[in-house]
Image (cartoon, rainbow, N blue to C red):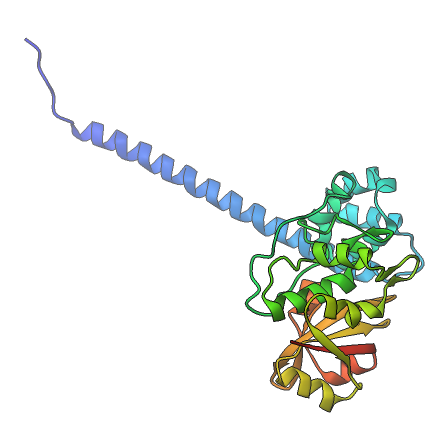
Length: 283
């Protein structure tokens, strides 16, 4: 005869102990993961702080700066080991904005990759970045869209936003600019891209007088403005940015080279002294 026993007090006690051990293990794993994430965040914050201090230091070479950063965060080791494969200008951009890291690390392998896709959303004037992995590796002029494509990227934002044409990517506008000789070797993007080139792409433009009244009038009418910038908050050499609107008396900017600068509001007075030329765009 086979006798079946019901679970006893001891069986229940054993199961409870096992469950408690499993719970404690899960808690310890979660706690360890949380501590690792906190430590990672601290390292990233310190790395960004040091990079900000090094970025505009003219006494150190780019390689020396990267070696210093690597003492705080060894993710730069691969770039250092393959230093000659990276354009110096791109590494200087990285030092000024570590958001570029994932893009930069793949540059030697993906340089000259072309993009034939479309934009995801053109419901407004979109913020498009030169170093977006979709098109940033594509050749433009003497290098790539990531390095020299601020002009076509700025115009891409404007044309796509006004016409709602999703094919007007930085890749498309860059190829257009090269085909119609709006890129000048050794100089960069011609200002004619913002007038004649824009008209060919389906939008009208006019040169604005540099005045607060003119800038605010255009933006209040929903007309984006492309500015050619000189040395200052946005560039050490030359750059194009897009003024896209107003908020509380301040100007909203789409900077194709920086998420951080694009997330800020800017006073007209700060921008005024850095603007070389500016164009208003409309249909």
